[in-house]
Image 1 (tube, one colour):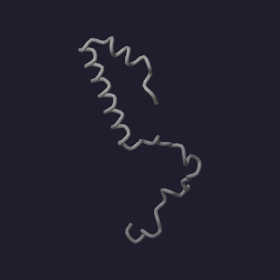
Image 2 (tube, helix red, strand yellow; image 1 turned 90 degrees about the horizontal axis):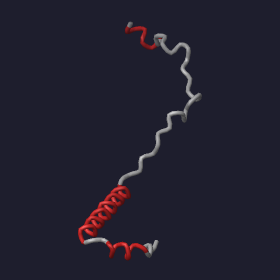
Image 3 (cartoon, one colour; image 1 turned 120 degrees about the vertical axis):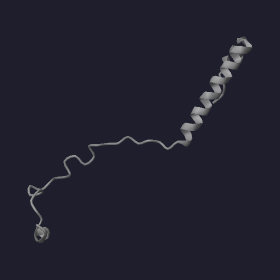
Image 4 (cartoon, one colour; image 1 turned 90 degrees about the vertical axis):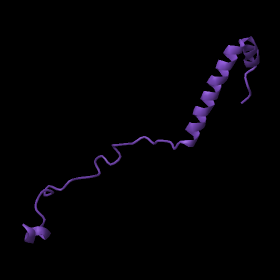
Length: 71
């Protein structure tokens, strides 16, 4: 993407102090964008993916026969 034509003209109208501020802002922005590019993207967690596909048996809380000798 090419630099917009109005930027050099606007830059020349800024005072030296404001040019330094603009440089700082641009530097910070580029640093932030660089960090975003290297950070792994976080995927949105979907909690409803298995909705209606998992059921709990009615006897879920009943004692297991395998553990009778320990009770």
